[in-house]
Length: 500
Ligand code: NAP
Image (cartoon, rainbow, N blue to C red):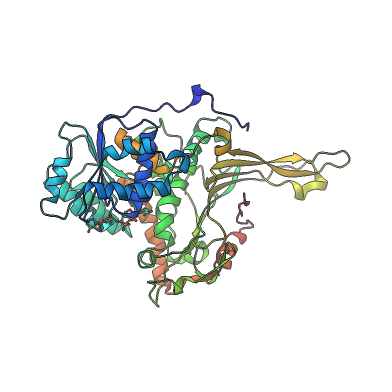
C-alpha cells in the first residue's frame, strides 16, 4: 500500500450546507467544550459553515455572551492544535457564537429570540444528562421552535436497558419524528470506521473472503489506559457492558458483519445493521459462564505510574459489582457467519489505549512447505481505530536469502496519517455537519438501539442472577485470566497490538 500525497482530484469534495442555527444545550459542559466547539471551529476554519449561521450555547448558568465566548476560547486553545488556532479564524468563529441561559426568567423566550425566524435549518444538540432529554424536547416544542427543518441530536447513554431506552426514545419521539432524531455514536464518525465500509464495499478483493469459509474468527478490542477518574458515581451505575459494548462495540460489529446494502443511504445501511443485531445469539444465564467474563481492576501500574484499584476510586460503593472490563464470545446466527465467533472485549486501566478490529483468516487448506508448517501463520487484518488510524494486512512472505525457505508474516501497512498527509478529523466533525446536511447514515435508528439493548439485557440479567463479583485484574494488564481462558479454550489467542 503505497504512501502518497492525495492528488487534488481525490480530495474530498465538501458538500455545501445551507445556513443554520446550531443550539448546544449543555453548552458549558465537558462534551460541548472539549469536542463540539472544537469540531465546529475546524469546520468553520475549513470554510464549511455558511455566512450568517450561528452557534448558540444554552445552559442553566447565568452569564452573558462575552463570558461564554471567553470560556469557549479558553477550551479551543486547549483542544485545537497550535498550528490550527489563529486569531483570524477565532474572530470569525466568535462572531457566530451566542449564549442563552434557559433558567433565568424569560430564558426560553430569549432563546426563541436568538434563533432566526427565516425557516433555516435548526439543530438542537442535547449535550445534557439523558434524564432531561424529554423535558428539554418538551420545552423546545412548547416554545414552537420545531419545524420541518429542525433536527435534534441525542448522546449516549440512551437508557441503561431496553425499558429505559424505550422511555428516552418515547420522550424525544413525542416531539420529533424519527427522521429528525440523530442518535450519535462518535465511533461511526471515525475515518477508519467509514474506511471499513470503503474497504469492504469499494474493493472486490476482500468481500468474497468475508465469510465463514475464509474467516476463522473476529476480535474487537476497545482498551483504555485511563481509570474511571472523577466519574466514579456515574460509571458505577453503568459499567463496561453498557458504556462500551451495547453501543460502540456492537456498532463496529455491525459494520464488519453486515451484508452489502443496496446503496450508501441512511435506511439501506441501517436496515443491514439491524439484521445483524437481530441475528446476535442471545447469551442467557445458562451460557453466561462460558461466554462472558466480567472484570475489575485492582491497584497496579499503567505507563510506569502506580494507580489505585477500582474499589478505591472516589464514589464507588463498598458493595459495588460493576465491571470495568468485559470479554464476550458472541455469535451472529446467519448463513455468512455461522460458526465464526466474535470475541469482544473492552476495559479500563489496560496497558495502553487502543481500539482495533482483527479479522483472523483461516489457515491455508494444504501445506506445501512441510518443514515450515509452524511458520505459516494464517493471514490477519488489523483495522486500527485509535490511536493511529490505519489498516495492517499480515501476509506470509519469504525471508530473503539463499539456502532454506523460511517465511514470516509481514504487514502491508496503511497508516492513514502517513498515507494522506493531512490532519485526521475527529469523528464529531463529520457527524455535526451530517446533522446539518440531514444525512442520518452514520446515526443510530431507534430499532437498532433497542435491538442492541435486547441482546445486552440478556447478558445483564445473567450477571444479576450470578450474584458474584467481577474477577479482578491488575491495572496495567489486559484483563483477568478468565478472559484469556475464554478465547484459549477455543485454541485461539487475543491479538496484542504492537506498540507503535
Ligand atoms: P457535563 O460536563 O456534566 O455537562 C452537562 C451540561 O448540561 C452542562 O453544560 C450543564 O450546565 C448542563 N445541565 C446539567 N443539568 C442540567 C439541567 N438539569 N438543566 C439544564 N442544563 C443542565 O456533561 P458532559 O460530559 O458534557 O455530557 C453531556 C452529555 O453527553 C451527557 O448526556 C453525556 O452522557 C453525554 N456524553 C458525554 C461524553 C463526554 O465525553 N463528555 C461522551 C459521550 C456522551 P449548567 O450546569 O450550567 O446547566
